[in-house]
Image 1 (cartoon, rainbow, N blue to C red):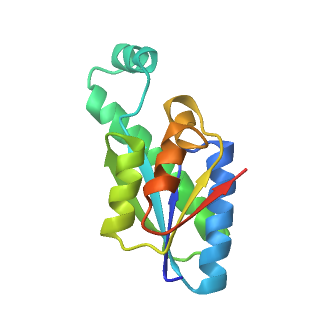
Image 2: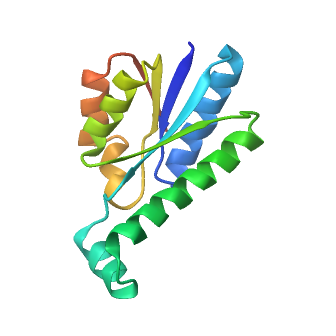
Length: 142
């Protein structure tokens, strides 16, 4: 394995997936790509975010940046010196698959449960789509 992609939403399940992906990357000397999907807030979350800050797109970007910054800190603590970060927008399964193909990854790692709108990503319809259509190994972490 030379390139490993891990999808994260900052949840406990995603952190467990990140831990597993970092271990795989370290063991195999592989690059670790950290991916979050921006703009996947629920309608209620969007209304709350829009009320608290006038610019919804900037709020969603900052949210994605925070998730990736947290993931980078965690990966570095686990011995990954230079994780690569990606933020995609749109349908989570399509975004994960697009990044996997574009980055030519050898494995995708996802957690079983996420938080908020990404809960589907991890052992729901999105993870089923990823495991069914991925061009590589998919590891689902409980």
